[in-house]
Length: 101
Image (cartoon, rainbow, N blue to C red; front, top):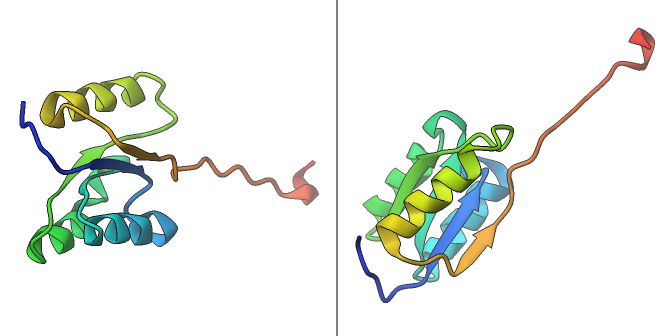
């Protein structure tokens, strides 16, 4: 386990939009950032942070999979020993076409 004196932030839905912006802002504030998204789509934002001298890791997370969430939490705790900030940005989007009803 990597013990860190830096604060650790975990951001879900970190690959784009608001989640990406939050991830970059937290990294800029000196947090170690765990960026999670489906299918490791957070790799680009993590590469950007690490390329600028920050510390970030990408972990695949599908919030529709109820087992995935505690598994990622265990991975974060095992790797860093702490979670100081959790940003639950990932969401589920359901749409319907009223014409189909």
